[in-house]
Length: 220
Image (cartoon, rainbow, N blue to C red):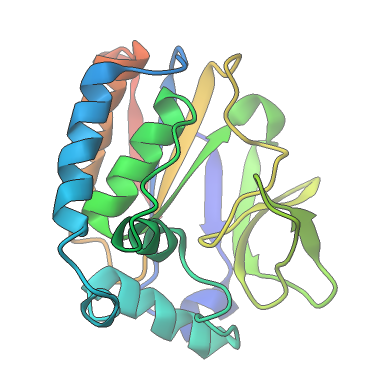
């Protein structure tokens, strides 16, 4: 299991912050019809929200308060779960990428937590989750350069590569990805993380050819 730690200063500002980490060997496919039937059911549920009620969902509200605590405007830099839910409420639907990214987005919407998926072959073996420094940025996946100053960011020896708002292109999931790390970023504590470990494991076995006996999980 790769080593992931939370910076003490970030933990002090967001006391309930916890990371649920899943590692697995997978095979990435472009699309799976059965998976998208599950996603469509979730989308139908999310579409019943309005914007005002969305902001009071526990996970989203907690992330927004956490961002404020470290000095980032959550209305300009939204958590990924909120951004996905807003797309659905606005009738834009979800984009189709590949089975791992689709699983990532489904679990993010079900849990209302930001979830990140990373190709371990392009990450070093020690990761720190810390507050972004002034002047730090990276190219977001499908986005322009993202200012990650004062965002919680995942950093390895080569620099920042992910955040609860948007991940960088460096460790993005490709068709060639075999070694996978998924991180559930909970701003509300660890209570629900085991439930979502089970959910992610089930989805990886069904839709990404993972071996249930080789899936590793831990909470930081």
